[in-house]
Length: 331
Ligand code: AVJ
Image (cartoon, rainbow, N blue to C red; front, side, top):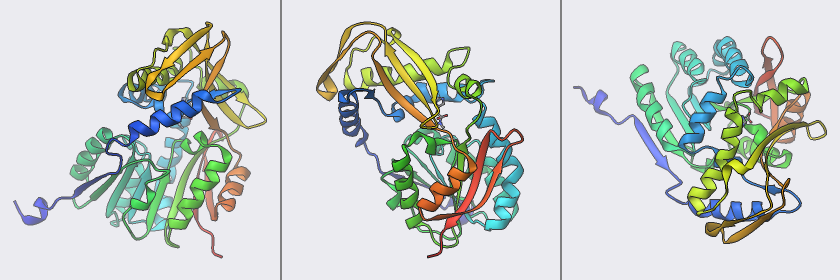
């Protein structure tokens, strides 16, 4: 074997190192103590089982976002790559990077693909995918950052002509002020030659939106309840999971989908790891996720409010989902 092949091409920078545990206890304590509406952070969904459920969700007939975004990316990847002349893909919340393949493929075809930088809270899928990508693209360097993309972005390696990708509509899980904060932080660390590729779900008929979050097979219900399963395991809580009912509805004033869990009983739940006891009356709810839905104008407006300038916005054939490309606004 030559030295070139022996060179380590995969680097994994783990910024979590177990720190996640304490943080979860604090977030769960604060969230479940909130009044009038209790709250749990959506990141609780994504343990190994929850990630598997989410994969199943993306294949449901009702859940259109994944399919729509993939069709946009497949169609526009060559254009994204030729206009940005990107050399490096920095993917925030990469998971198994299935939609990123089109981008990497187009970048490799342009002869400019140098490095892939996946950022994710969960190490295993990233490691598996890094190995596979290195086999597919000889010469590709992978620098994985395991961490929370709200907090650990300062640890991103420097680079040239970077394409930051934040896909799936995950930006919609943040509240409006958090979105501007997050995008603003990103804008601050972007160079003039860098670009942001952002996936955003669009406002549409309420029944289509609500079905996507309340599928006939109950996969989303199971995914939603998984947040309680994780709290039971991580914090020793005694939620009776099947006694909480899945709810999903579109709030037209906020323009977001809300997922909640509604207690069927009067019950006091003990959460020793968070040092609290949480009383529920039958009918009381916990909000587990918001998923904001945008208009193209609103995407433009929020980017502008964050110091970013919209360059392109593409939608699928049915205008259900949008992928936008933006750059740091010139002062
Ligand atoms: C992966 C966060 C974009 O908000 O649509 C799917 C998560 N929640 N079904 C979304 C989710 C319920 C999904 N994101």
